[in-house]
Image (spheres, rainbow, N blue to C red):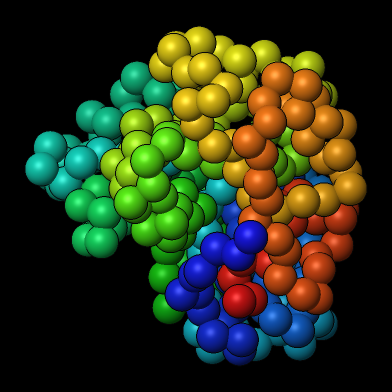
Length: 254
């Protein structure tokens, strides 16, 4: 099954901000800048970009290191975005609050950006735009779910965590991210959500975003309790199975 998307052109550069590094992604290139220390210098990052000959003419920074909070636009106070993170995010590090308005779904995504990354990329890539992974996925998931009679649960597996989206038609009922180190962690949170929403297996479709060998145990575990399982197929060429967010590489290159 395919998921339509209107992502960047093939020459555009997306940089995923992860907890352990930055993933530079274009249609032709995939490089990972691993954080050897907590605060890489601007010179080291510039030299690394130059060494790999990465075209940074049009760049989007996509934050994935911390979950975003989804807020209906009718309730969103753009003057006080911090309010929406107070109960879901805390950090010992300095951070600022960013928001992304999604006109297609009448929602706003509020997310934290650590000050050290704000300063680093402002110096290295001052013209880069900023977004969040949830802001990219939500409009297409809502469009896919629109008109469906059963609820649709989407699971986006990635390294050490997973994102879960639950829709009734085009309406978002739940969006959250959960930690996971193994299949037992994953199934625990998956069962928790189904219990909270009183979902019986026959009442919803479960769709994994991509299908990758590294997550085979997760798929098999879910199949033990749920029959209505589907997968958004990866776009070719398939991403490296070692990439921490493999579905994104497929998704952006459609």
